[in-house]
Length: 228
Image (cartoon, rainbow, N blue to C red; front, side, top):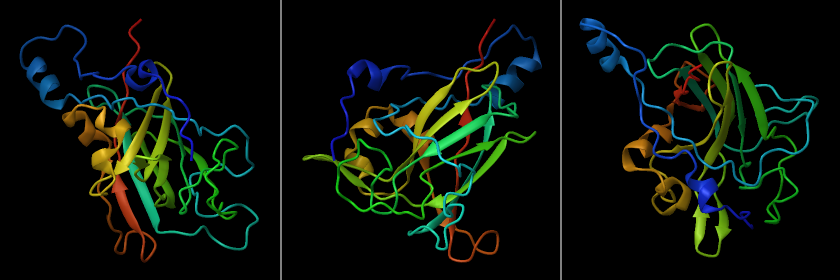
C-alpha cells in the first residue's frame, strides 16, 4: 500500500501543544484549575484515506451496514469517551467522526491499492454527537495493520476528526496499547512520550456491559477553545 506523501509540515503541524489555563483567577480557584486541567489531545496527520464518497449509513455502529444481511468481520470493540475543554468542562453537541481500515487492513478509498479484500459488511466511516456530558460511543471492529512502505507497517489505528462551535477542529489518531507495531510507527513516534499516552487506548473484555465477546476502551478528547 502506498501511504501518500506526508510533508514534515503536515506531520508536525500543531505538535507539541500543551495544556494551559486561560483567564485570570485568584486564590484557591487557581489551585483547583491547575489540578483539574486536561491536557490537549495531540493532533496527528489526517493521512491519505479520509472518505471521499458519501454513504447512506454513517451512524455510530460500524459493524452493520444498512440493508446488509451479515455483520462486519473482526473483533467487535466499543470505544467510549468524553470531549472536554482544557479545564475538563464537557463539550456537548461536538461532532465526532471516525474512519478506519477493515479487518484486512484495507480502507474503502480509491487511493488504497493494497489488494487486500474489502469487507462489504463494514461501514468504514461513522459519526456521533456528544451528549450534555460530552460523552460519545462507537461500536466498530479492531482494524487490521497494513504495509505503509517496505520498511514500515502501520499499527491498527482509528482516525478521528472532532468539531465543536467555539473550538479549534482536531484531527488525530487513536492506537491500541500493547500492539507490537506501535513502537516503530513513524507517526506515533513523532509525538513526545507524554503525548503518546494520550492517544493509546487499552482494550478490556466487555463483560456484561456490552455484546458478549466484545471489548471496550476509553478515548477521551480535549479540544482547544478559540479565544475571541
